[in-house]
Image (cartoon, rainbow, N blue to C red):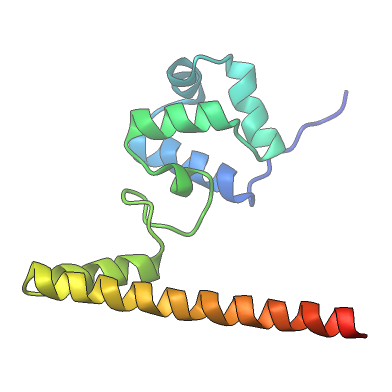
Length: 132
């Protein structure tokens, strides 16, 4: 009989184990929440992946972000990466909505500059290739 091994180092399995530990639920509880068999849940740990539908149900039921559950480096509750959390904190500290709008405008302008640069660069490469 072939022995199954859990993917203990896989990010999704780590998160599933954290949920078991922090929320005090079992694999059977996970199966009930997701409407799947206990064997399906065990397979998540063996394969190192959880199905999209089950991940959504589990994240919603347990109040964790889907991105966090899927192993991304984000805040457990908000689903934001550390730099995004830092930016949000700075944004919230601005004293007025006018200041917040100004920051949004500056970010939009910067993104447009980047888009324009990329378009110009790609167009230049295309023209150069055609000439060659």
